[in-house]
Amino acid sequence: MLEVEQATMNHEAQQRLAQIRDQLGIAAPAESAPEPEPAPAPPEGGSSPPA
Image (cartoon, rainbow, N blue to C red):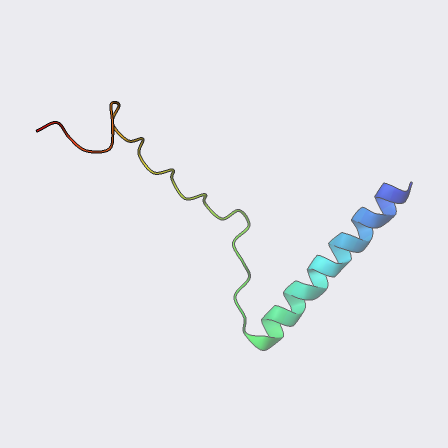
């Protein structure tokens, strides 16, 4: 039962934040920001190319 109450309070708080953002003209943050792609793996055998 506690989880339901907390979820309800969280939902109401999110709605209130959205309302305040609208009033202030602030854009809402992205729902799920895309994760940056990982850097490519270095080539095997060391960090410098063979001479």
